[in-house]
Image (cartoon, rainbow, N blue to C red; front, top):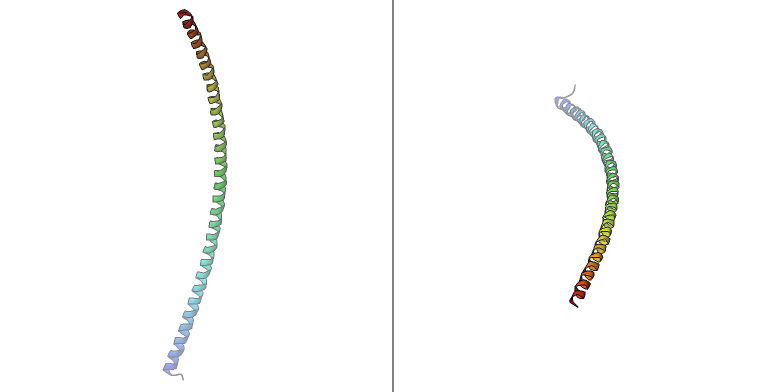
Length: 111
């Protein structure tokens, strides 16, 4: 028959072995869960990057369109300014002719 100390030692060893196995199993479960979660996060990050790239491309296209519209409007304003300048030059020319005529009339009256 086994002594009491031997039985205690055997029970301790078996208990420790069972505990180590349970810890090893839980550790493996945690590793698998962690790996699964890591893969999910990698997929989420990849999706976010794709969405950012799509948004960035859209915003660049939108900026380009607005830039083109702005260039068109600037061109139209420049044309309008050119027309106004021409009209003003014509009116100033006409006013100068009237002034010259008035000055000539006044000069001829003084003589």
